[in-house]
Image 1 (cartoon, rainbow over the protein chains, first blue to last red):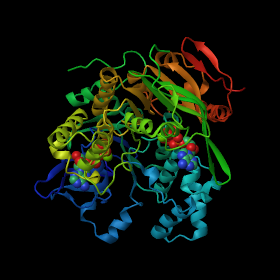
Image 2 (cartoon, each protein chain N blue to C red):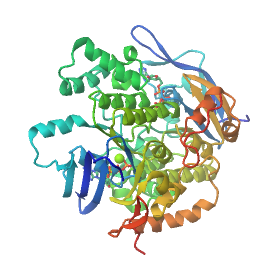
Image 3 (cartoon, chains in turn orange, blue):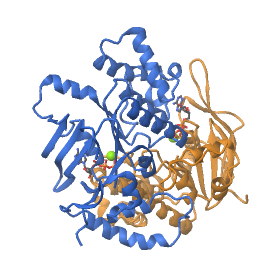
Length: 271
Length: 303
Ligand SMILES: Nc1ncnc2c1ncn2[C@@H]1O[C@H](COP(=O)(O)OP(=O)(O)OP(=O)(O)O)[C@@H](O)[C@H]1O
Ligand SMILES: Nc1ncnc2c1ncn2[C@@H]1O[C@H](COP(=O)(O)OP(=O)(O)OP(=O)(O)O)[C@@H](O)[C@H]1O
Ligand SMILES: [Mg+2]
Ligand SMILES: [Mg+2]
């Protein structure tokens, strides 16, 4: 791939225990291109969130990234950055929408204030310009600017989720990581949000790392997909190939486990 | 609908929340019944009142209007002994595995506590065996999992703990609010099969709340579609999904992820214009009930 935005090389992450270490991520390597929408799927507990946290260096003990691992963002290894450089990295280069992010907004602060906090900390922006920028960002996610004065509990789950996404886009990151961003939402709202991200990344040119357990949705939105099993990346391919001609037995098993809306409730298992 | 008497029913229940100056109709004249050995699915918009219906059943909220019936009798004003029976017969699996487990306690504690409360006769080795059995049912290794704290588990592992916790007391009714939303597909299918087996073998009555309509089809004989506090369409699952008549049901079904249809396909922007209209109209009160076919009803949208 030419000039990937993200290049993960031999990433190994352990959770250090009192007696034994748990190998959560085992020697994983993959690239995400500029403007690419990359999906990461796999069993619960296979290490998806662990990778997502490591990319933004938000992992905490007992998680330990093994030596020899590399996470290159625009060619720079984030694992070697000092605190100052890390501050630059977060929000500006990588922004992350967490699993159950819609509960991550601060309940006692207005939406405007939450934008302001990010914009002021990272760009020193004045209150007034932050307000204008926040209004612009809300518009990107189809929320009228008059909701700036609202508090999180006054917005629906879908709106809160879109606010989190808008805050993530505030500093024009190169990579947006979304960990199960729409799991708690109905499919109409989910569809609206992902349509919006799909359009925005075409307009703004950022790349996306998208984590979900919904393979059908993943095929719909992703350019390429990686399938993880117990800490290992077992298959990476174009979304259509993952759907139509899955190579790994585990990928085939995943497809065979998905209930269908029409026809037979469950596809025949192809061993 | 069925030949068995319902074990639990909501009869014309309404619930309004006041927030600041505005009111939210979280339940508007909601009626439905749960039968032993059957699953009823509840799907719909986020914020339409699905969890509110569950919380009304769990008696965390009191209805403003209408009644909750247990074995045909109103639960309000029933004897303490009956309330206790109700509490252990009706168990809930919560939507958010992040907040439903207490961070300061181990998994062992989370499973032991309900057993102590509802099955005090079960002690020592017998209780340990029962705990191991429910964990094995949800495909977790008891030896590995029991000493852990909630933060040491992945999202899906936590969700399985909350299912195990509900099963631990041998309930008759399971209220499952998004019980598999964080599970990967292969584990999810295992949990859905487990719900199906329990329904058949233990004659459990299940209310299955979900955003994943294909899984509703897999587990539920009957389905209800909710929008803005109203059940807008309900009936036999195959009939409702195969021949949806309410505009919101149709919208919902058209947005179900489909690997054969890429995003960015312009068809959706037309639908988007209609989404706003359908949302506005579906939010109005829809008092009329129309029968579409045998065991299939809608509340027609006002035009
Ligand atoms: N703080 C921790 N201490 C010990 N083990 C941990 C810790 N956090 C996660 N793990 C383990 O690491 C593995 C990977 O967890 P991770 O959260 O990355 O999974 P995931 O793929 O995101 O799963 P899900 O789809 O359920 O969210 C799991 O088996 C989990 O039990
Ligand atoms: N305790 C409460 N106080 C005030 N408003 C509430 C309360 N509980 C629920 N609501 C409101 O009632 C409506 C229905 O909420 P509910 O949680 O039942 O929706 P839901 O269908 O479960 O949504 P989701 O699919 O997002 O979980 C929402 O507008 C919600 O904000
Ligand atoms: Mg995760
Ligand atoms: Mg809910």
